[in-house]
Image (tube, rainbow, N blue to C red):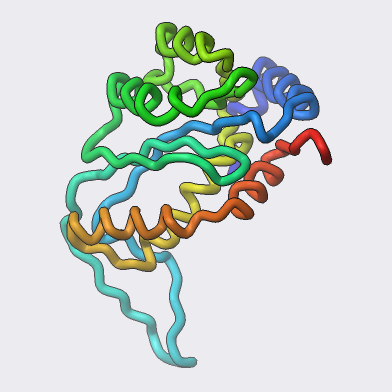
Length: 200
């Protein structure tokens, strides 16, 4: 399903300009940034049972607090996923970028993120630019252009399979799922979103 707002003329123009830009950028310079979240008791929406039998799955009625995930991902699989209990605020996002992304930025790198309000931090953009990198916002209503969305999809699948019903189990499941991400995964996700390394 797609957001109806993608059909607005101004958003159509933004998306077209972004697609044109995709053909000019080296995917290996992109650092994709985003946030997501998980909760205790998450389960897969499907399963298997012997023919003719109903599949029954049990999950906690009351779930714990949301665990927010903040992450960045590079074409080569480099990146960081940090956890925070509760909602991500602007200062959490700023701290994540300053601690986990700024130290690894190199001149020519491009930081890709969406238009969420917590990303509206001119001083943070200045800090990124001081490293010789730049920020490229995604077009509005266009998460499919951000490779890290596919990272979240893989992590959540593995976390749901883990049936993590306690806070401790959830944290362990997040750590395990993150360790399963490979460089091949990342390269495939970037290419799926239209980003290619220059030698292609």
